Image (cartoon, rainbow, N blue to C red; front, side, top):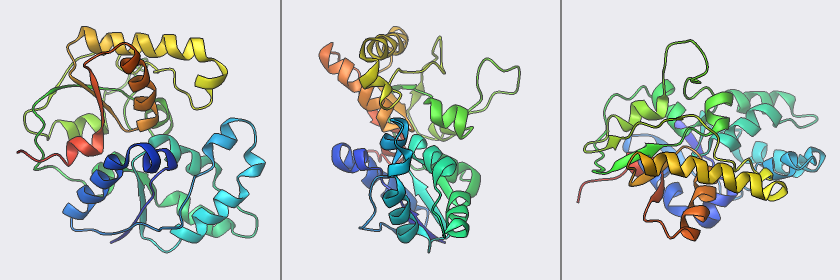
Length: 246
């Protein structure tokens, strides 16, 4: 199984440890993982700002870099969701369609394709799971609490395999953090208030770490935590799933 690892630009620039953890985790599964060095932004920031017509270059580069893989895996639900909905290129419709069908968020790939049922990871801390909106409502990584339907969560299923980890209960487990891409710029006050409310839920329930499938959400929350001088930390789920006992 030949895997193309897509690392979003903000992870590459600000949180490279999460990228390394995703790579190591996939390699531990015995997979042949490649990181195309010419990959770049998926184009989501432009599309979110109303300039999707300027993402043609991003789409062309993505198709050029990732067409040859059996699967494409990415540790970011929002970027995966964007590509699944918006990866199109005139004259390359079949290539774009094939990529959209073999593109997976990391936890989705581990549960749905690899169907793993055990991990060697250890993380002896109290952890709050933030269910990011794109992952939950777009990729269906977990059930929405407002629906009268059987509950499920692919990230929770994986975290339950980590030795020593205590997943804390939350009062509003699938509430938005307020990041929303460019929303946090255009509606800064609303975004910050939503972030503070999301953090208070984790703090109230005793979290030592907050994890998620999207570092964009975690980056937003981390900024608020730093201003509050809080000891609560953020960590991408790949880093927990790959964490080995000392």
